Amino acid sequence: MENDLEIFEPTEMEKLPANLPPEVEEGNIEYKLKLVNPSPHRIEHLVTQMKWRLEEGQGEAIYEIGVEDNGLLVGLSPMELRASVHTLENMAERLGATLTILRERCVEGDYGEEDRRALEILVRRVPDDQKFIDLRMSVLGNVDAGKSTLLGVLTHGELDNGRGRSRLNLFRHLHEIQSGRTSCISHEIVGFNSSGEVVNYSESRSVEEICENSTKLITLMDLAGHHKYLKTTIFGLTCYSPDFSMLVVSANTGMAGTTKEHLGFALALKVPVFVVVTKIDMCRKFLIEKTVSQLEKILKSPGCKKIPVRVETEDDAITAAQNFDSEKIVPIFRVSSVTGANLDLLFKFLNVIPPLNKERDKLVQGPTEYQVDEVFNVPGVGNVVSGRLHSGSVREADELMLGPCDDGQFQKVTVKTVHRNRLPCRLIQAGQASTVALENVERGNLRKGMVLVSKELVGCSLEFEADIYLLYHDTQICKGFQTTIHIGNVCQTVQVMTIKEKDAVKTNHRAQVVFKFMNRPEYVRVGSRLLFRQGTTKGVGEVIKVYPYIDIPAR
Image 1 (spheres, one colour):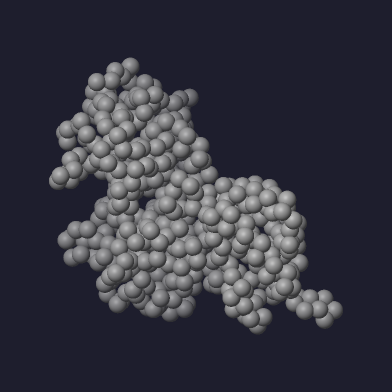
Image 2 (cartoon, one colour):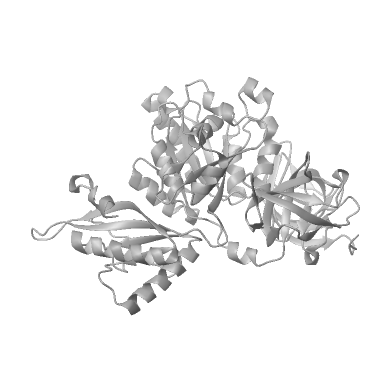
């Protein structure tokens, strides 16, 4: 760590007389003026405090050294700074955490005094129940915006040749390679080690090695950009529940095609978004500026009400990442997958961005609810389902209830094996995506939209009530209107049975509506976000009441 301190030259440091916001009791950010030779009793208190900050940040905490509790940047002398960092190292070592210096500030001295310095340090400790801090990011944007190419560069560490070579690593079907367009959801991973360095794929590095060497892993979900694959894109947003989304915009076309639609879906589902403007190597500066200005205008509009922030320096990237969980700002990056311009800023942002799911610990303690989003058969293994665990935990040999079937019933199944990130594991917990091999179930009894739940959660509904907001309709929605609805992993046609206190719903109006599934009962949870569409009709909402289908007996 001493070597890290010595690499900063005073000429390289930015003079920052501005103060920080006052320290907040909650959260994972801690201010410390100095930590020079604390007593043993003080050390115990500091370690307990660090442990609490790490828990608040789900494994990550930010320490501001040389800063008073009111946010005043005081700074420390080089000797005091080294002693404070040494104390912080000892504290982190006791908790099994690592330190990474994010940035250094220089505070101008008064009356000829030597300039003093303040440090911002990232403390990271992988939670005891995980191998690494795990985040999910969906990638949105119009067709030909460069989404798959950018992901290929981020995950494989090799720049593109200008003709889309890097995207070939992500495509799963022959027609995708031939057309150059994504039609299904593909998953890739990018890892960061304890020093904040990128752990990428290579000829000698496998998925297992990436997971083994990473303390933070981000799963990148490449969603389709073409309008005819809109159902697939919406399914990825609702079913996989991404922690945040990356909206990719081409610098030469701007907010074209489905870009606005994808942005609207993410904001409606309350998924934090940041924007990446690609292909800056093939555009003149005035065209890039025009695209960014167009973006800023849309983000500031009454429909979005966001604060766009241009990321041009490493300091901007760190600040944007730390404030990203406020859901008010939208960072904007300008990158090139061919020249690699500003990709380092994007990596810095992804490394520092905190876990955004604040209720994970509470969900882990709850009953098991696993959402099935894909079903397949593996030779020698049998029937396998993939999906995301919303709450509780799943381990080998667990007995769970699978359903609902077409008649609304659930059947008892046994968990054979569990895989996460293509690796076998004994346990998965809330918020984690995985594949589960099942025993005592036939292939014909499996489908997308099912759930694996504990016995106390067994139940389904044919009708439910939702508080909806109609984004757009040519005229108005009345009783009897049919539409396709997405609720988590459920995608089915529903009919409007009742509109409470109204005869119809018009564009930009709210209402409480009772929907009925047209094909079969489904497992629906109160509080789930929903999205419905039919042609140009689009709306969002939240489930507020579920009407039980029948008293479900276990088989």
